[in-house]
Image: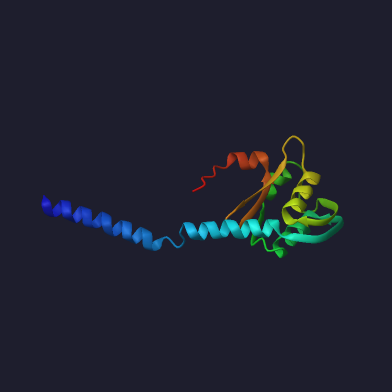
Length: 140
């Protein structure tokens, strides 16, 4: 009985050590990624002057501004009439990427289901409020 008990404790200890070794990133990595996302969204842009620019090009522009991964949930967006070809006309000076994106989404959104974006880790996701409400986010 003592041998089984000790073997069980040893096995649990080995499993916990292996789990820690497999975890590629700790809390410091997550905090660094949040800071990187926040820095990219707070980046100041001298000017944007878009006239009937397709939304897909705005998404590509976001990637160029340092937002590592930009995910547009096209199915959810299409339910409110927004697709890759939806056009944006916007002229702003001395604004942050966050302010520009907020204005773009306000221009495209349907009042019944507003558009939103969430920055989590190194990913910026663009979708509808109802789509995000279906998701469960656990912040650690």
